[in-house]
Length: 235
Image 1: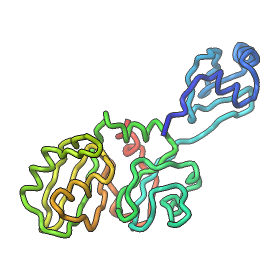
Image 2 (image 1 turned 30 degrees about the vertical axis):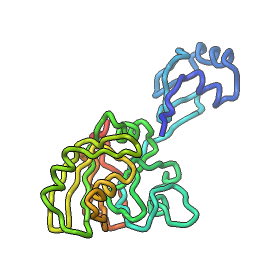
Image 3 (image 1 turned 90 degrees about the horizontal axis):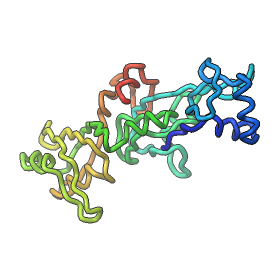
Image 4 (image 1 turned 180 degrees about the horizontal axis):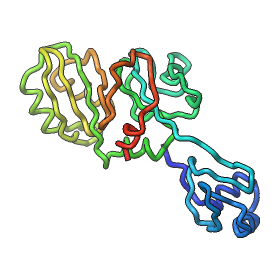
């Protein structure tokens, strides 16, 4: 999801459906303010959450929204779908139609899902350079052995994409359940990594993304707004 950041004069041209000369005159007249301050600079950078006024007319007054959802299995991580219920359908949020998903989960996976209308925040969350850890509880069809730990830590080469995964941490919780920590999110990565051992994944549940942990008071299908501290931990 690309950020909507750009120059103030271009925003005004599009919003007012006028040309740059007229916008320049508006700015020089001191009638345009951004976040409460008069702006005369055409190069001023604004984004979708800048509070922009022309005189007494409010041109833009968007509020950033951040939600966590306890995604159940059988619900798709999409904003629209013709066959299945989507995660957006589950949200009790006035701005839900403005939200996009930051880090999808497969149809049959469950757990923490984050949604926002702030593209810069979601870009930071999902950027490969940030290496935000994601923790999953994985249930397997067959028993685990110590061999899995070393293989995950070393990374695995996938010839189809010609990539080697980043080192991943695997902790064996029970005979058939592991906790896996990834710093990336390749296509079906966890299922493919366990596939190297011919061990099918029968359950995949995301516990956390960075310092944001799934609220254990949320039942499957329930969500809530993130706290200011949770929002601030992604930057």
